[in-house]
Length: 143
Image (tube, rainbow, N blue to C red; front, side):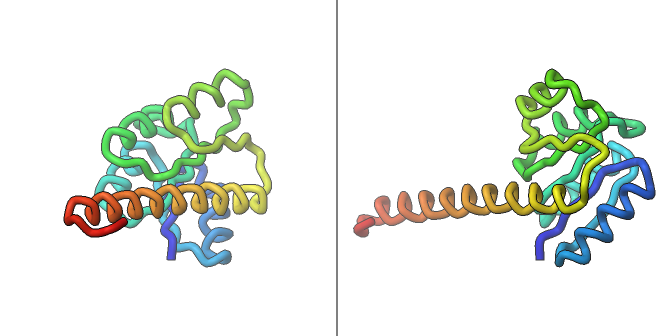
């Protein structure tokens, strides 16, 4: 089961996202501030995806993204009220995988979660296959 962390300071939005994703078969966690989000991603290696609000207390979402990119490449979907193109471009260049503007539909969030996880899983599988192929060559076995 994929584990998704939602970092959103609005308790009601956080609860709605977590409950909806849980109803779709995902294991969910929540963080209400940026510091907790970074700590949870660092400590829980089985988190598959981070849904990240930008306007978080203690540490903004863009700082959270910068910090976690220092130690993990888990997929990140930014959710924010900021709808300007420059914000979207900057966050994706910083390492976000997708950007969804608030207010958003939970079904749209779900399909974006599915798409990002599908791409990440395919990328991970390719990396594992490449590593296995390289190991076979090193051992002198046919690839």
